[in-house]
Amino acid sequence: MKKALVTGANGFVGAAVCKQLALKNYEVIAVIRNQASDISRLAGIPDIRMVYCDLSDIKNLHHVIADRDVDYTYHFAWTGSSGSLRSNYRVQTDCVKYTCDVVKACSEIGCKRFIFAGSIMEYEIQNAVKNEGKLSANTVYSSAKLAADNMARAISNDLGVEYICGIISNIYGPGEKSPRLVNSTIRKLLKGEHCKFSSGEQLYDFIYIDDAARAFTVIGEKGTNNRSYYIGTNPRKLKEYLQLIKDVINPDILLGFGELPDPITTLSYSEFDVCALENEFDFDSNISFKEGIEATVRYIKENIYEQT
Image (tube, rainbow, N blue to C red; front, top):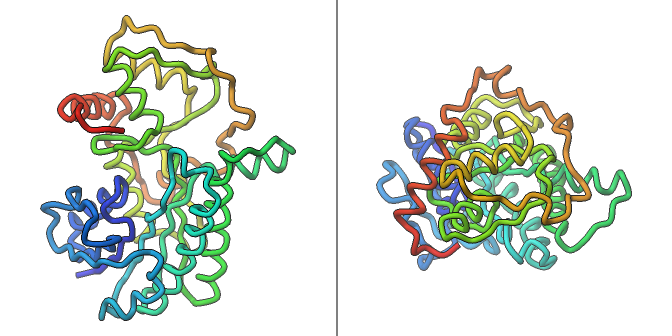
């Protein structure tokens, strides 16, 4: 039985990856911050073992667990990936340090492959700098992700640990509680609130949580060392996605396109190979955006009391 260690295992994406790994008969070591952490997302997963270790102490993981036969380490733990903490430079720089510490811990327990949860926002910040765009506090998270990716990659190479990066586009689905676009838009529309957007002409992409989890297991098992793989589906105009969300909830709703300014920096999606998973591993998404939104809306309706 193969063995995988997952940081941030009780988070939205981490838990989905744990489930997918368990379905593939992995023994999963779920690294959880502390015993007060909510582990409800991990309920019922077979062959999963909880290990309580805060990221601030992750460098000592080899003292916490006796395992020296871990095949893959997946790093999803990151404080402030959404909301106001995105602009908190102390929180974000800590996350960069912790990412490097996880690579070191990976080496200490004899694990030879490290999979990092990257972000397309790394490419947005690079474009902004290249084009001399105006940076704001909102780009601190993007900068930290980029720094963590580069530094963890360098440290992995130095330690002889294989490095794979999964470039996350936008993951959505049942169980998400963050203020990200799909989740917050659905909740507002269900409450009858008016939603303001930019023109919606910029390209965007979304991938359903189960498909994203499958993608991460594929790149973990089959990805080429030092490669970055795009985790997404088929980029199209943001307006098209938002209109589909609206149509699933209520076709008569009017969306406020153009009521917010367009972003200064956008992606053309030529920055990465959006077809790499399909071409290299014959990977395809199982869930269409419409199916995923319908499932997400059902979940939110059943759990409408949950706060975002």
